Image (cartoon, rainbow, N blue to C red; front, side, top):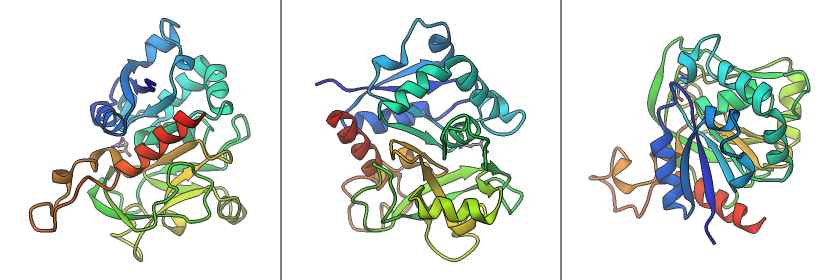
Length: 254
Ligand SMILES: NC(=O)CC[C@H](N)C(=O)O
């Protein structure tokens, strides 16, 4: 069965082709769709099995990374998106896409509750661009990190990747409810590139079907994307592909 993945495009989004390749390698059929096509209803979100919001600099990161695209999503596509999520369909926001999901209130959710989590400027006060190690949190509710038992290597490239929470209780709640999906491996900077508390790299919603992460698994799908691919034993594929494969498998099971 053909499983269609909607890869959202918007002004300034620039990793849509990478996300499309990752979906294709994972067995889905990606379509890169501009947000305006959804807003004018010439294309329906509900015709797709999964949604990917890729990385980039949507609307030039004005008013804070992800903020303006989040406004589009809440105010012009809110109901459709809410239904999509409630139906349990996979939504993955990568880097700028994660920022969009958080600023739209879809992560950690529930939508329309006053936001207690945001993403803000890296502690280093600079854009961080390098490969990092990630671990999947064992007891997380996330559907797409299941079975990832070894640390994985993927790149990061962001200026506003630090999780900020309203209070300690919020952080404790994220942990206790299994909403922390991924962490950076290693103590402090530079292993944790942005200074997020508890080294959080990715969050999911309570249903586990919405994942947002700062690193870029879509740029770690082919063996030769890895920086040591000529020096280390042959890799069959990039570590990031597991996340997309899990999402496709889960979407197919719905
Ligand atoms: N690669 C990205 O998606 C970057 C996200 C955002 N523009 C930032 O700098 O934080």
